[in-house]
Length: 602
Image (cartoon, rainbow, N blue to C red; front, side):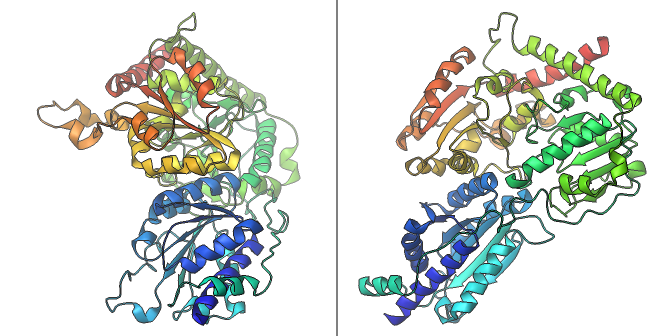
């Protein structure tokens, strides 16, 4: 049993070293080859490591993704060998493009068992290669063959690579071969636990450098630089910085707006909507259905990735304007439009808004907005106010009664119904787009999460569970296919300490596809339902109940406030609203045409 004992000691040493760097949360999936890692996690759990378990590696990785996005710290996911590792790929892709730190640890066979027909030996070293910041491999003869110093160095390198200098945070794959015998017996286990101190001292936030105001990347001056004395606009895309950098970002944006008077076109996932001190434009998606010449801008400061609005993207591409892009530590190109003056592309800085602002010469901050900039900003604000009042009239009647249960009305009202500061997770496809276009800007501020790095729907429920666990409570707004795609996420209900309320828009399939031009094809020529919408005959309330999750169907939006009161007090609950996706698609199209006409007449 000597090798089995050494396997356990090596696993303990690796995890202790990671905890010494800041690891505080881990998700374990079952397996035999990963037995030493599982035992080590169990031993370290009462010593400061928060441990979750999951039978589904894909769900586990997405749960960790939600935790990591909300906390800004890497979460470890531990799996066995073989196809278990392949199930980590969807979350690794999102972590890569979403700039989320994640530590993926897989057990493996020793090198001598590779390529010879041994059971469960696959090329798992390559499974995640395209998406990770760094790949680390234990000794090919087994982790137990490595010296203590080498194991500690491997752990340090893996942890550091989740937030690499000069790159955005992201996923890391640590592949660890274990030689047999794998499992220590009782006496060997006790001996390994007694071997050396198991106490860990997690580093402080200051030691982790999490309190910095920006990305840490050196700012380089733009040439030409934005002219704060002339009119311009700020386009704030989805926030992808670390939460520890959020206050500095908001402070820098406030300072820029006070100096320039530039209006801020704030994406639904920017995190800015509801902040009273900022002059925000929320209705740009509708305002730009038929863009008015008076809203054209010669200068555009873009923050982070592009918003989802195709109308805004077209407007940006059509501007004969200088454009600058500042990202929060993301050096990869975020300008798919190739925009800028005469198509030359926009200049990009990865220094973060706080870092970029701090690099500007002191003279640039002298004075306030010019009269021309104030006049330009006033035109945007006037259109914003007109359109928001018009939306209130269209989506809510004068006496406050809903005009029907539909997705547009839900997006308009939900933000006003939810308690202030309660985090909201928006599923991809229709929910996030409706929130961008129709959410009420009068709603109080709250963290709003959307996972638009790769814009998938495969881990929606598990991600929301992770966000709820990090914050203590959250709400998920999702469609039926996204919820079904991650039905194993319901299993988290037995471990969640945070509360999660799931609001399901059940429109019988993929509502986003109703926006495709092909929907106009005669049904006898194309089976749209089968090829695109793919409705599933499933009782979501029954499926949730089978997992021990209570749920209710909301028949009218007028019933939503009382049903929310019930659901928000449950550990995990489902509220189902049934809508007509074809009718909602027609409403969106009609509302956009009406909005453009109403603005032209005003």
